[in-house]
Length: 146
Image (tube, rainbow, N blue to C red; front, top):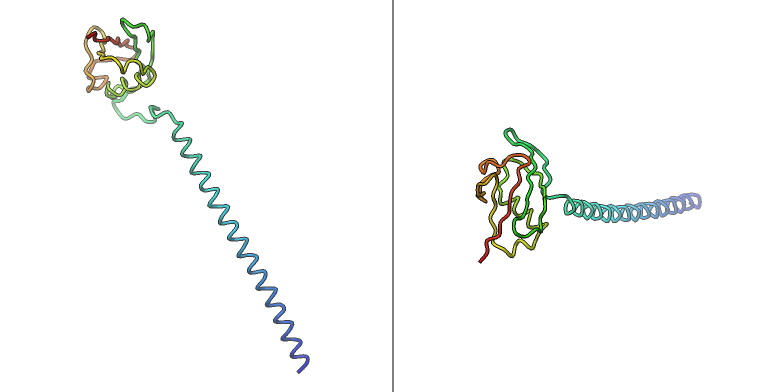
């Protein structure tokens, strides 16, 4: 009986050690899960920053019929813009390029303006192709005086 008692005590001690190891492993798993959550949050934050820093006007793909081109803006009357070049696609609406121009030259938002290329007035809601704007064309900005 004494030997059996000792055997049972040994088994209980061994089980207690196993329980302690299991608890340690559970704690380790919990700690690693927390680390994983923190790292995932950090990755999401870095991805978000990267997306915010990415040029929102970056040309990432070209579809059939689209051409990459450069257009140049020059202001008339106010010599604020000597030559300002934008890379765009022939299928872009002119208004989008105008918006990009105003991001770099916000003073022009104060004025009513119109644009001309090759002596013809540009229609803002038509594409560059529809306005017959070609690669390296110079677009003149005029301010309407009131």
